[in-house]
Image (cartoon, rainbow, N blue to C red):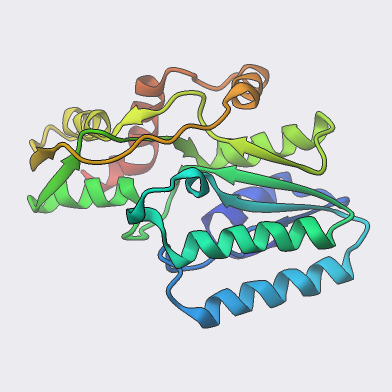
Length: 232
């Protein structure tokens, strides 16, 4: 069973199984500013946890919870922490799956890859923070990683389902420029922070599933897979 109708939920439906409830309802606004949306997700989780006590409850959360910088101290992340605690407190069996910058067929403007793509296409000026990186994960790979983690017996844990390697934002832009043959209009700003997570499980899952572990090759693959049509 899968809760949600967005990009992640759609990918999880391909690995759905009767003993698991995947919760990927999420918030449409990545800043989490709408209290109505936050209350809706809280009530939905409580309702589904009560109705399905025998299922493994898999909650899709955010890797950015580990980022303590003021720029990311948002209602969205505070809400994610609260929902993680709700699931831990009410579920008999659970997995908290923290994931990173999920890439897929989404036009959500707050998504980093969409932001870069649109700014290159329109020629709009933007800043690149040089002291930070991102962790990109294909939405279809995320779904397979979640299924594999369950198959491996992980339960009542917080897992990081992310790529084994981070990549600098400048390098992401550079790969977009190479793919599209468009030079971006931007300036490099010495700003940002790095945040890290344990990638031991991610490395094991990437080996198990045969995914590309090189961050540059992986990024180029994502751009070709999801953005080629937008530059044609």
